[in-house]
Amino acid sequence: MKPARAVASFDSATGMLRALSRFLHGRDVPLIGQGPAALEPALSTVLGAVNRLPRTLQEKAYALGGWAEAVPAHRIGDIRSEALAQWVAGHYPRRRYPVAFIGSSNGALMHLAAALNGPWLPQTLLLPVRRHGAHPDDPREDLRRTQAAGEALVKANPDLVLHHMHDANQDRLMIAGMTYFRVKWRRLAEAYRRFLEASLAPGATLVVVDCALRWPTTSVSDRYVFQHGALGGAGQEEYEQGGPRVSDYLGRYGSPRRAWDYPPTDGDSPEAEWGFEPELLTDLTELAERNQWRLVRMRFPEPEALSPVVADLYRSWYQRRGLPGDRLLAECFLLLEPWWTLRSGSVPYWMVFNAEPSRAGLQAYLDRVDPFDEIRLLLFSHGVESIGLVPIEGWQEVLARTRKIGVFTGVDTRAYPRDFASLARAHRDLSRIQTTFPMPLPLGWPPAEQFLAERGELEWYSD
Image (cartoon, rainbow, N blue to C red; front, top):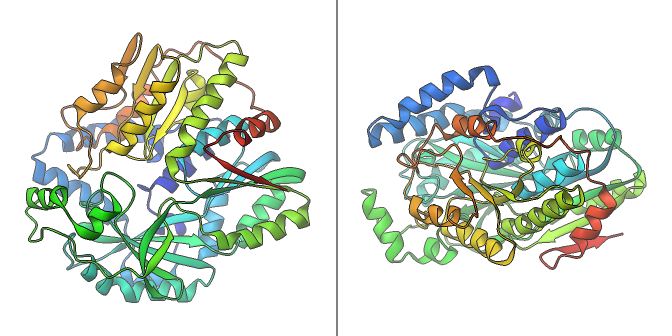
């Protein structure tokens, strides 16, 4: 099976891969990574029409779009990890880089890599699998119906670990007809090795991106775990024990349940979407030694810990270039754009999702830094009024903290969180920002490493 057919285009890792690779090719990201620029007007019109449908039809259209990408369960065993790695590496221009990144998905990292003009190889990819007959609020049944497909996948790919994830809070619409198989490389793919050896000269630096976030899981079989819930608006204890917010949420969506019944957990694992599988370190250490590279491990406790660090790095970089650094672009999930960030002289701050923990993190960042003259805010619409979702009024409070301009970018505030046209509209709005600064030359790795190594939010290990 062709990797482009197997990997979800709507996932964080895929969107980040496309955004960074297009930047390294000297291009922006039309449709925020969802397709070619020529389709933007037509798709914007279609998605705008979906925004105007009744709510039930909106949700069905959104779910159908995801289902169309999913792999039939009987084909999942045909997927090969080496082909996936070749597909990833094929996104990048072939040239020598002073630094490269490998490991956890992270939006702030994409801006760090863009500033340094370096590539990133994701450890984790999402393989959506078609599934019928399981209610979104029945994680046990989801596992029962798709376990055989998961077993076939890990049997065919001994270098992968499968994290079967079920999140009825944030992914409610998508998992009505599919399940999420997130795979992590535990051994270095040959295509990754070839790419790195062709891209890094002796003395270059390979940075391991190690997000330490873990989540309770159920062991299904060797290299196969099941994860109920995910990082976002609801806490781990709410997924496990329920509570008033869970009961209210399920009631609003007409669910027959008032709490989730999930397979009992028997341990914890690297979080499916964001966590780093440390077994990969063995191969990376050996590869770096053989090629005389410096191996650096950048470890942080949860995804957004890197966001204020990269924002501060950009602001100090702009100031050294004589630029004001007074524009903030707050991005959300896969809505991120390295090219327009640098072209507009904006400081990037990336949020995992549109939920309260992410807003609190952004507010805390604004509390401790000098005020911005301009704040632009991108919001990902997942179609669900989920637990912890921040309403538009809450985001307006963030925008009110600017000294001059505070605006939503690509957001129809009347349609959010069912604003499905935002994917196209965000690119249009970003391209209209006044650009008076030239695209900068890459930031040097030595000063960037010194800045990062001194930050308390990160654990920094280097040889």
